[in-house]
Amino acid sequence: MECRIENVELRIENVELRIENVELRIENVELRIENVELRIENVELRIENVELRIENVELKIEN
Image 1 (cartoon, rainbow, N blue to C red):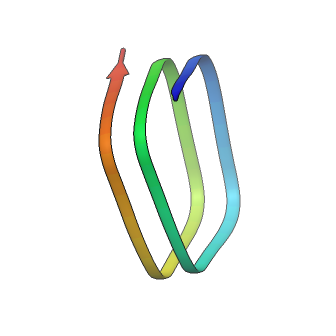
Image 2 (tube, rainbow, N blue to C red):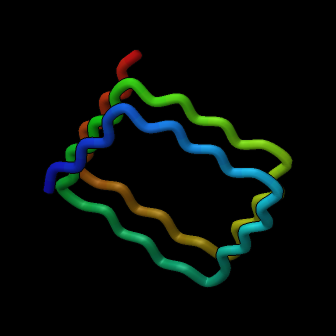
């Protein structure tokens, strides 16, 4: 799997995100993020009871 995200402006404001009882597996993933401005403001993030496995991942963040 190849995922490219280019020339993206992402704004997340006034968000409450709750993730509970989640098993997430990401395997054999190449992720490229280029020319990205990311703004996250006024965010409360709660992640509870989570098992996260990321295997065989190449992550490139440029600029």
